[in-house]
Amino acid sequence: MKFGLFGINTGACALPKCAAAVARAAEDAGFESLWTGEHVILPDPQAPPSPVAPDYPMLDPAVALAFIAAHTTKIRLGTGIIILPQRNPVVLAKELASTDVLSNGRLIFGIGVGYLKPEFEAIGAPFDHKGARAEEWLAAMIALWSMPKPEFSGKWFKFKGVNAMPRPVQKPHPEIVFGGHTKEAFSRAARLAKGWYGFALDLEATAKCVEGLRAACKAAGRPFEELEVSVTPSPRVKVNRDTAKRYGDLGVSRLILLQRGADEAALLEGVGETGRDLIGKV
Image (cartoon, rainbow, N blue to C red):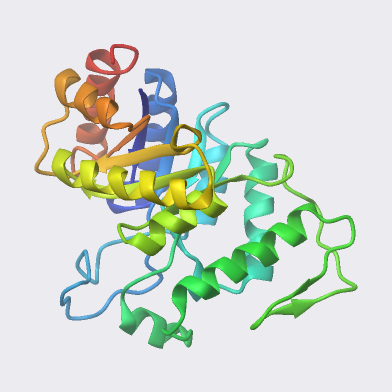
């Protein structure tokens, strides 16, 4: 089982000293990856389905991971997730290629389609056809990352006679992971990505998602075993060796654990406990 840590850009880790210390400690403890979350803005006052209070600090994923790259050497750096339909794909391709270069090829590009309508409205992004837009945006980004002379012609985005350097270190492009708990999200992961990421899932919910992923892989003509399944356990789940093994038995190969603690000292203690109790033992 691989172990990742979620929230290297949020909460106490939105402070540079804390983020750097936690990142170094996680790498030393044997964590495989560090993951960011994303909401460009949050509704104020908070109302469902907004996940956190409007004053909760959350750094931009690409900026945060570039900073973390400078304080680590080998741990992988994942966006968990970037809300792709809210972004300009050409600009984002440049930002993430830069992150991959600065980290020497450690970026994992985790993608979501978003669900907070007020966020889309504030950004000026359409809330309709989010899944289709995300697929087109991704195809445009891959063209910029991988084609000798990039060009793209889609329903919403077109370009040719352009280039963008430097290209990502990873060839042909950084690893792609799709998040989401819907049939459509499972299909995008099966068709377009190396992996899938499920957030805040208990064992029962994970089993249902894996069943959906298996069906999506079958429909796409892809062996399910090729898909790397990552899950952040629900905060209600106590993650120990037994529960980690049970996630693994369901087909999960990476557990991306939530931060444990509200300040640097508590976060470092949680990282150390995971290193001692879980990493290399499941």
